[in-house]
Length: 118
Image (cartoon, rainbow, N blue to C red; front, top):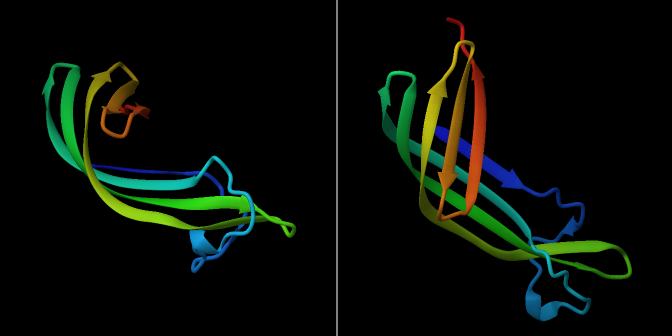
């Protein structure tokens, strides 16, 4: 199992009921985005190396951003659910375990290091 959450810090004032057709200020080219994904899967170990595949279920929230005379403003753009997958490899060393995962659909790679107590 694995849980991944990524987001940028939104320092703007958030207006949950704002709409794009009521905007009278310039919008930023960069939207605020928050993604969270829960993965579950299985794999196979052969000696010190293991391979695994996981299916993920997630949610993505996107907000419009802009600035007016008062300061930064953000309001809802979309809120959607998605399904994805990732594959990875695990390698055990004497005192550490190295894990590398890639999710080709979402376009990111994750590296993890764990300590062994052997």
